[in-house]
Length: 274
Image 1: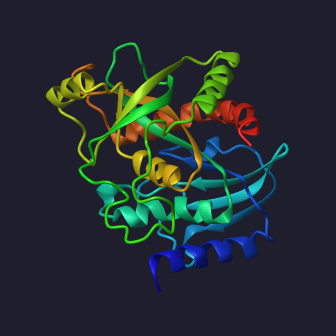
Image 2 (image 1 turned 30 degrees about the vertical axis):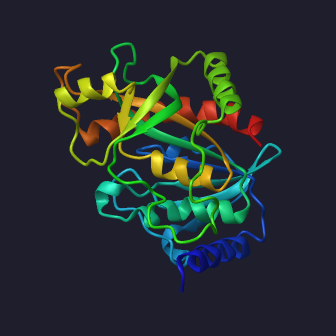
């Protein structure tokens, strides 16, 4: 079975289990954010392990469940957990859930993630709406594509993160009085955290925050013609900006504390995206 056939098979399985629901809005929840999922009407929950060909998550803080339901007038598909390049997965595997959502018919994808702040003004607990990224992962998620079944092989990335969606997200955060910034995401392969010298280099390249996800999903979504927005939350100060070394356990702990804030933001913001 080809990769494209596997994507279509997974999408068909989900559509059947979801009683042919047609979500138009997708949401990916990052580290420690499963409890930030908005309350959906008539939700259907499917474990990743049940979906044919669907990769399963292996990092603590990533639940591995797909939920489909309604949020107001919007039909939403929520991925509670993601794969990471540092786990040893191929980019095709990391992109698989995004491509399945695109094949289900979603038109807009909202991505969330934990990030480290490379700028002192961005503090743990602050939100960052991504306006661009620098891919420093060492690989492009479209590498090796042998057809244009998911879109053009050379997609334009001049506006990966939709300006209108960014504006809506910023307004929603300010309306709820959450500290928020716009920023550029420096995407790294991980799993080790950055050195102070690396953080200084990323700032010179234009990076405001650093992380180990987002870009594979955003690029593949853009290739498929989806509108993309990314809402990040600062879990720690990057190396060299704090005397406290970053820890994954800290990411999960702060994620639990910020989940209520992010849930409120998403319940305000998402219905406007559909």
